[in-house]
Image 1: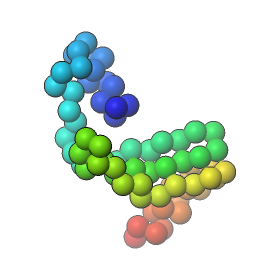
Image 2 (image 1 turned 120 degrees about the vertical axis):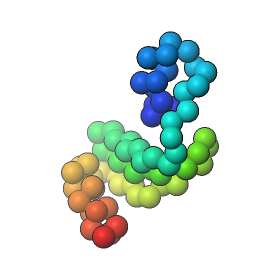
Image 3 (image 1 turned 180 degrees about the vertical axis):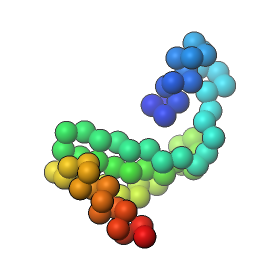
Length: 67
């Protein structure tokens, strides 16, 4: 839902808030990071995740594995 928050705030309604699929999301906290592919509503695939790894380091490692 956070990927659609900007549309919700702009429209001031929860109808017609669908983003174009697919899209990538990055979930980052102080210690954990996930890269998630969203193909549709409720259709998520975790492409990579880390525990206790900084986001920059994590993105470098994911990029190397994807190429």
